[in-house]
Amino acid sequence: MFKLKLKYFYLMMCVVAVILLAPSSHADATEESLDKIMLLSGLTAQIEQFPELMKNGMQEAQGGRLSDSAYALVLASIDQTILSSAIIAVVKGALAVELSSTDAKQLLKWYESNLGRQITRLEANSSTADAESEILALESQLLANTERLGFAQRLDRLLGATDMNVKLQKHSSVAIFSAMMTAAHPEQSVDISSFVDQIEVLSEQSRPVIENDIMLTFIYAYQDIETAKLEQYENFLNAASSQKFNKIIVKSMSAAIELSISKWATSLASIFQHKGATAL
Image (cartoon, rainbow, N blue to C red; front, side, top):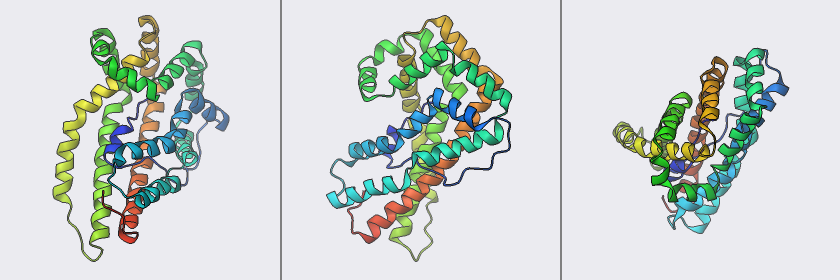
């Protein structure tokens, strides 16, 4: 599975949320097979963690910048906008449209295998708070493993994890700034082009940091798996059905996230405009 590094959204005050209606399904893959693929791949669990992860991230980013009342309103806005069931419906709907029954069978063959299940479990374990602390402590040691670093780099290229995180960071910053400016100057057309240019530069400057973080997570997650088994995993990810699966996920989640960030930014602007909250 791809890695969505949520802590970068915490720093930019953004969230992951939903598109409310899923697209119609016309492809061969059955609903049961799609549910199973999403469950066994770890995608369902990752999405279900989003609301609480966002709240935890807000707590880390808060740092006394907001009054208690404003902070409570921001947390309430997360409850209103981050609906894991709706995100799952978006991704499942996109898979239903584009994934064939043959694709689904090939994916299930992997995810139901012992190795597939082991890798999904290790990926999930690498996303815990304890794992993040251990990754920081082992950073030099992990990066010194050049063989596994090379694998992590290839995995990142296959999954587009760094690219997705950088893109969403850009959108998050622009959406929140735009909503705040509109709230502050409701009668004016606000030109934010200079801010957009700045965010473009800053986001690209942050790319090495984000990429390094993703490399560390990948190396840590798979550190106890034999190289031969990782080669099997890489072969699976290079298969046509796997590439289609990951592209669908990235595309559908990116669309949902970008729309949701815009909605949440509008909600934040309303809170700060009408409730007298302290500005971020």
